[in-house]
Length: 188
Image 1: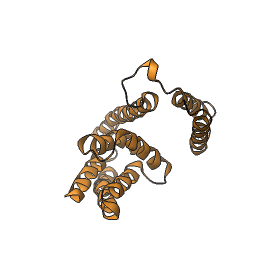
Image 2 (image 1 turned 180 degrees about the vertical axis):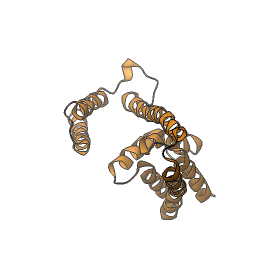
Image 3 (image 1 turned 135 degrees about the vertical axis):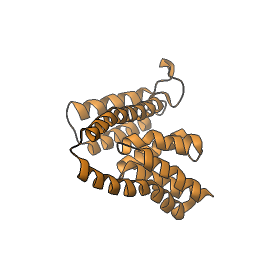
Image 4 (image 1 turned 90 degrees about the horizontal axis):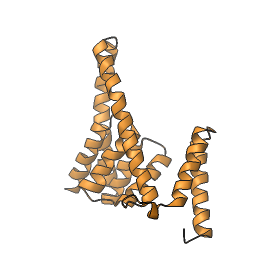
């Protein structure tokens, strides 16, 4: 039964994650934290971090991670297959359709209407993770702000946007800085 649940959960993620990996984050969270309590919100945040750092699409990495966590290697295979099955079918079908009808204005209108929805999904995922970092999942309040997390966020944002630093280097430096701060000042 767990294999069917894993397959169907990640089938939905694969089917409805229009716009790529970041747009899939709220869908994955809904499946693995809310509908099926396979992971806590903190574990989910760790999952997103690991899935983003490892090579490959975030949704596929997440499916593999959750599958292994819930049902071992067979679970990883089933969850990953559930996640990629819609893409295999849809991309093949859409490539054929787009190749045949790419100059139609109706198709261009549909694609232009999907862009804002994708941006909203990505923004929603980002705000959800930012809230978890800053307030540790509690209701937002100035008394419980994680100032180390806030400073790390601002430093990473400035480094990435203003100085155009390498994202991998930025993640490594922020992780090292966070570790050093928490080792030197454990009360923070």
